[in-house]
Length: 325
Ligand SMILES: Nc1ncnc2c1ncn2[C@@H]1O[C@H](COP(=O)(O)OP(=O)(O)OP(=O)(O)O)[C@@H](O)[C@H]1O
Image (cartoon, rainbow, N blue to C red):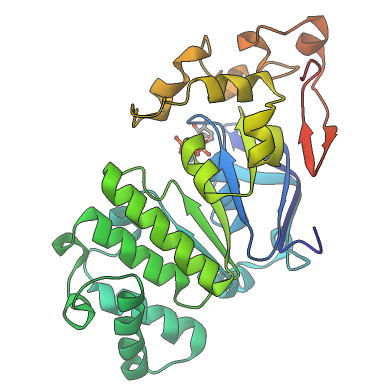
């Protein structure tokens, strides 16, 4: 990859409270090229969302970034002031959350919330910004956008609200869009429409996407490369096609074998992972060695004692496992 747009190196996030500290994310590294769509996948609680929040400077105590770097266009975001980060957020890096209702302001018409982006980041007047908001709503295929701009979030369906979130996120043509489980709260047909829309808009604008999901199926459709997280570690990171053809980490194998077969569908990630025995350990109980060791059928003595390091698999991929395939 030529110089990456985003380059996360050895990111570490700890939970520090009441005089104790627990590690939540450790040694997480990945890079995203300009215009590339990268997927981050893993079970609930593995640290996907807090990794994303760290990238836009929205991590709040007790969570703190305690190591590593997040370089965006060469600049380490962890060194920026709150003011500098505010200028970047929503402008060059935007984020779409799982539940638009919590991200949107319930007391403000959606058009106003879109317009705010143009005023805040592009110096537009409110008059100009409100005109642009209608165009932005049309670009996410909301019918009668000139009327819909006056709606409050509760007057819209879940799918329409998520379209509004996409309009807000893409208003300033960001270089990077972080989409954290953007369709999990929606029903299947709407999910597919929203993902297609997001992909088309980002492709057309050359926007890079960090797509976060518990669903490897969604990632496979949208992304070229994927990072598979387990209990705050990156287990494997590779082109999606390689992961499907030759999964290297035992956890990845488990994830793949619990994907629903064609024609069946499970809507909850947790159910799909039933083929891997056991549950993700809680943060306070992370094993000292490999964090997947208690659930792993290939584990040996070294896995109990030592943390696996990155093993280069070629073709821009690595795995962290002593007994990888
Ligand atoms: N504010 C907080 N205080 C303490 N612990 C937190 C806080 N937010 C998240 N955590 C913990 O950090 C870990 C990682 O959470 P995170 O939300 O990133 O997981 P995730 O992989 O995105 O899962 P999900 O798909 O359910 O959102 C979890 O164990 C979670 O309980």
